[in-house]
Length: 298
Image 1 (tube, rainbow, N blue to C red):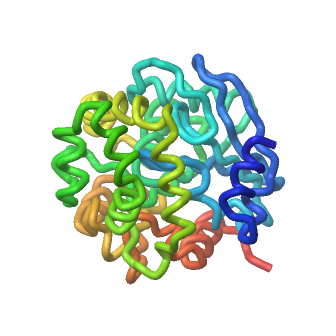
Image 2: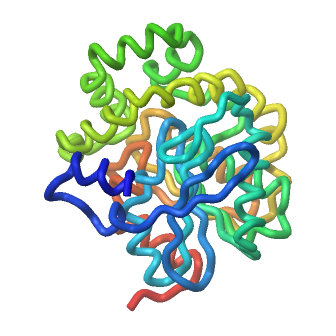
């Protein structure tokens, strides 16, 4: 009810089916994890990106659940999940998602990840390849992560982030402007950045628990390269890579390099789309996922 009431107050006339579905919870690695579980059949786990939450998959949850079982968690420290005061390292997130997948007895499972979530999917594929059937990587983490970020805004924030108290103050004073600015960096089609979308992002940013996990994630980002990024060529799982032509975070060349590194991958480019193709061009992305999974629509 808390989730439903919060969304209802924010979107009194725009509540989608996604936002009305009940939220389930389970305990993983010292964190009460929130997730959506809808549909039957082949299990697909949707992993959101850095600073995001399950809403980033709102255009997939309903569409894909007509064909598959769709599980959409808020990663530890994000969204409706608990935000314990721990180190949010890549290895911690991998353990948490392993626990989640084992708890629900998902075997084999397809992982669909966006940005950091795609990096998490790759790390899980390296950690437990026998359980992962397929991967879908949307604007995914590359090797040499920090050197691959093209956005001056993101690069500056990740390398020289302000003190936590100052970031919180900035969110309070100029939160809506900051929310819009970040959205403009990841979404190419400006018409999609509506006041409701900005408000939702702003509400997440001013949550007292929002920033500490993000700061912890940033402190551990370099571990992605040393623990997982340098091993990506080992992955032999069928993989679909999806990239937007106007991705300002990881340019198209980064996606092409990732495609060359993964020997069993195919590469799909979505035109007029930024860093979040699944939200910006959902029809094309959903159709590509179903085709990759060899599932016929209708």
